[in-house]
Length: 132
Image 1 (cartoon, one colour):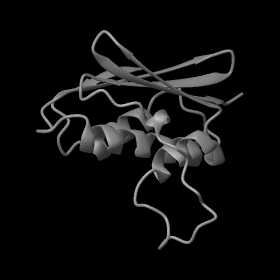
Image 2: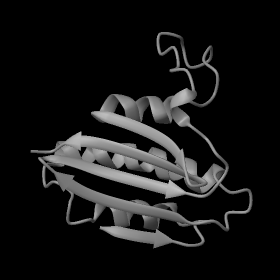
Image 3: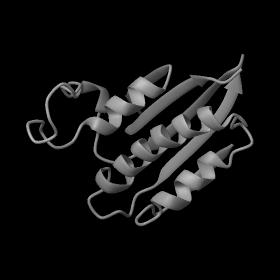
């Protein structure tokens, strides 16, 4: 699946649903739950923070190769590598932890791999999960 959303302002739910309804998605409910959480976190971050005015685009691609689902989210917003952020200390109480950072942490824990690159002026986030 390949879809482009332009502009993305206010379209988080539509983008998430489009990715999750891809023919590449597995039928296993447990896997779908994990994938949805990871996709929600990634898409929400892009929609809310990549562009100051929400007028930018997001391209979403899904594919399966050798039993591994790849989801690629690409935008031309502010360069931001979510993997540079230190994992939160989840042993601390919610009151003692700084706000933010749980989304990408959750994504990294649920997926088999999470990769980021800034290429040709674009943020490219790739998440992978073995589905077969």
